[in-house]
Image (cartoon, rainbow, N blue to C red; front, top):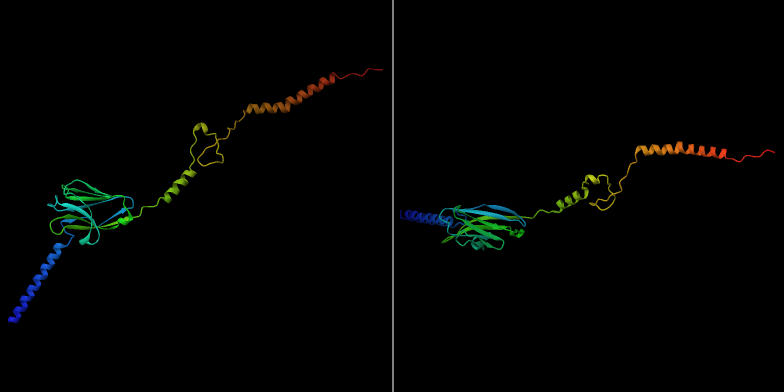
Length: 225
């Protein structure tokens, strides 16, 4: 009987200790519900990104921070607030608290590919701090080679529109993008062409005939005998 009671007592103590350990572990877990934020964010190389973390009422005047590293216990701080709403900037990172909205924002600028990592947004309080993990991924900047070639081709095959006074000008073989002109071709009036034909086919033979008649009249006559 005493052995059964002893076993029951040991079992109760074991359960109580296990329950307390579970409570302690749950309490110390950094991903507290008092602070929340995005699980993951993405940015583009040489761009910027902003992370907003929210917190419960009562934490307005506490220091907020941003650290880098997957390991919570030795995550080095990147930047902290001063316990006020004043923006703090350090290098390419800035942080600002908003008590009315109960949130603070972290902005990372001039992003680099090696900025990809696990970060934490947290609140500095007595005892274990409150934190929320954020996975940051930086994608390579898009190449501009294709768009540059497309623009160059468009400029090459697009000719400027000549103004009205130059519409009679023609393109000559030369450098792309430069307009060179040829002399304007002048069309003779139709009346001038008719006059030229009359001169050739009518007036010239007539003049030749008249000249022949004059020569015939003025020819020397032979004397008789």
